[in-house]
Length: 201
Image (cartoon, rainbow, N blue to C red):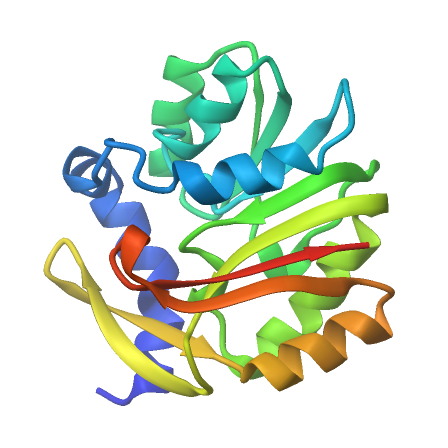
């Protein structure tokens, strides 16, 4: 199966493997350093959007416990059902980020280990959608690849797709939407080698 054929099945994999993914996903909050940097730039009374929120732990849970209003979006209903059971007072929306269209804008958008499942072409589209959903001063936190390319991964033993643009491409595309890259850290050892992009509108 080619990488692009795998990409076409990624949503179905998460639908099937949602409960297992949630069980196996580390909950030790190794991401806290970056979540804190994101949070430091949010205004008081912020409302944020968690895109690819999964079952809500530990990322959404972290912000909810901080008293930050959070809306979650994911394309796998099996994971949203878990999130709704855990955090019934929050809004959880089944939606593919490639069709992101909400009747409000947000003080921050986070897409942790979700945005990089898109093809490079779709990432270009979604960056514009993210910018459109950010308020002036809004903060964007993404996990991306350390360099441009396409690779495969696995969820619950099934193949899934990953890709990335170059940091130069991300910088140029975001700047065109009025969003400035603040920090890019490729393969951060503090978060098991994930690459981080932090930007602000």
